[in-house]
Image 1 (cartoon, rainbow, N blue to C red):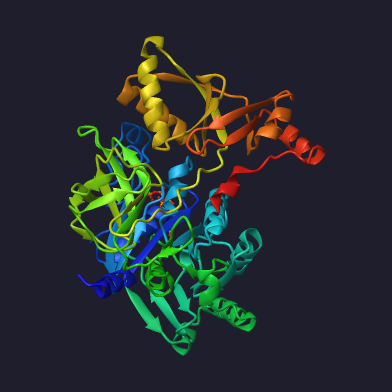
Image 2 (tube, protein in one colour):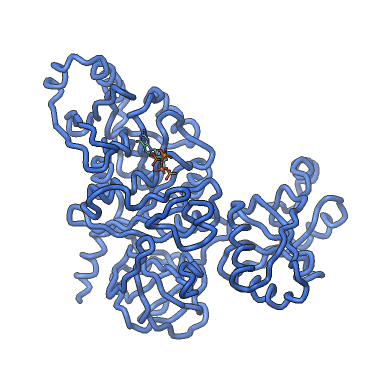
Length: 528
Ligand code: G4P
C-alpha cells in the first residue's frame, strides 16, 4: 500500500456523530442513514426498545433493565463511494462522560432538533463540547410530519441560543398532515415524498421544479416559498469556511420517521464534512495522514459480553494504514502493543477487522494495557494530547457494604477510575476513606455500583453528598478556602487537579465576587 493509497482512503472517510436531546430522533435518523446507504434493508434493526430485545443494547443487565443503550461504538457504512463512520453517542437523558469523549474522536456532528421543541437542555450541553473543539455542525430539524414550530423561529433560536449562523440547505413544505417534502435551495427543486408504512423502507421521492410545484395549488407550498425568498433575501447560504470553523451550520428539514429529507442530509455529510485532518500532537504539530499508523483511544468499555468478561478499547485511527497483527507502541508506557484482536463492533455483533484507515474506529479486545487517551503508533513516535476530564455536575459518597470486601472495593475502584467510569476525588489526608465520586450523569454512578458488585463482588451503597459545585484551585487559594465552612479541598484522580467542592453554589458566587484574587477556575476550561 503506497502513501497515495492511504491518502486516497482517508479522503473517502467521513467520521461524525449525532448529538441530540433524548427523543429528538437520533436513533431513528441513524436507522434511516443505514437504510439510505443500503446497509440495512428495513429500518428497525438499530432501535433499542424499552423492555424488548434490541440489536444494539443487550450487553449489560443494567442496559436491559433500563431498556437503553449505555455502550457506544461505531458503525461503518458506504455511501456514494465514501466510507461513513458514525460514532454512537449514548442518547439517553442520563448521559455521561462517554458521550463527551466520543466527540473528541469525530470530525463533525449532526445536531438533531425536534421541530416542535427546538433547542433543548441536552442539545445545549453537547453543543458546548462541540464549540470547545470547533467542530463543524450540520443541523437536522426533525419531525415535520408532526405539527411543528415555524421553521424561521427555529433558525432564530439556533442563532440566539447557541450563536451558530443557520444556513438552510433544505426547507420544509408544510408540517403535520400537510408535510409534503422539502425544497432544496441550492438546486432549486422540490423533493416531494410519499409516506411508507412507518418509514420502514425508503420514502419514494419525486423531484419537481418550482413551476411544477406551484401547480399543486397547496397553501403549504406558498408559505414555504415565502420562507425561501426571505432566506434568499438575507443571504442565508451555506458558507464552507464558517461551517468548518464551527460558526455557521447548514440546516436540513425533514422527518426521520418517514424518511423525508434524510437523503439530503446524508449527501451533505459526504459533500461538506471534512475528511480526517492531520491530528495535532502534544506540541500542536499535525501528524501527516500518510505517516506511520497512529491512533488514540477514546473509549474503554468493559464487560459488554457477560460470558466473555472482556474489555474493549476503542481507538480512532489518525494516520497511516492499520493492519491487524501489526505491533504498535503505546506512547504512555513505551511498551509494544499487539493488535491481533482488532475488531469492529456493530451493535452486539463483532467482526475481525483486517485493515483500517484514518477516521476509522477499531476495537481492541482485552487490551488491558490501554487507557482512555492513550496514543498508539507505528514508525516515527507520536503522542496526541490526552482526552480532557470533564466538569462533573453530580457528586456522591460511596460505602462498601461488607467491610470484609474492602480489598475488592479498592481494586474495583482502581480499575473503574482508570477506565473513566466516574471521577474519584480524594482528600489528600484521608486516601480512599471519605472519597467523593463525581460524574457528568447519574448513569455513571449506577454503572459504577453495578460493576463493583457484578465484577468485583464488592456491593456498595451510594451515600449522596452535600456538594453542588466544583472548581479547580491551587495550593495558595486552597489554604484560604480550607478556613471557610462548606468547602472541601480534594484531589482529582487522573489529572491530579486540586479542586474545591462547594456545598452551596451561592457561596461560590459570593466568594468569586468578594475575593477575586482566589483561583477558582471552572473545570470546563479543560475542554479546549
Ligand atoms: P432518540 O434516539 O433521539 O432518543 O430518539 P428516537 O429516534 O428513539 O425517537 C424518539 C421517538 O420519536 C420515537 O417514538 C420515534 O419513533 C419518534 N420519532 C423519531 N423521528 C420522528 C419523526 O420524524 N416523526 C415522528 N412523528 N416521530 C419521530 P417512540 O414512540 O418513543 O417510539 P416508537 O414506539 O415510535 O418506536
